[in-house]
Length: 69
Image (cartoon, rainbow, N blue to C red; front, side, top):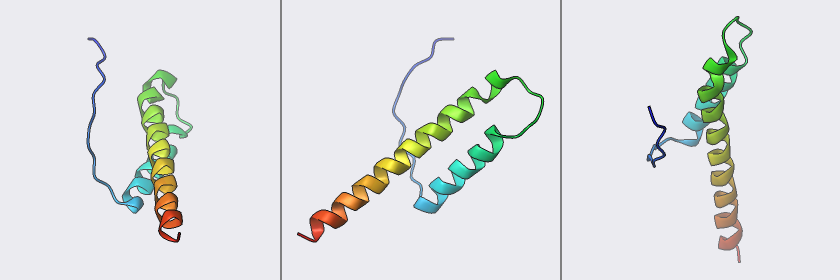
């Protein structure tokens, strides 16, 4: 099966985004005897969501800063 890259639009509030990141953090750091390769997609998703959260925070900061000029 080939891996394809695409774009998906997901609408989440800031709180929902943080809860998803927290849940993935918990899930990927559990100390249970499973193959670490199993957790790779979840860890990747967590890092992607963290990057998206940072981008949203930066955007909000820019909007607030630009709005005060």
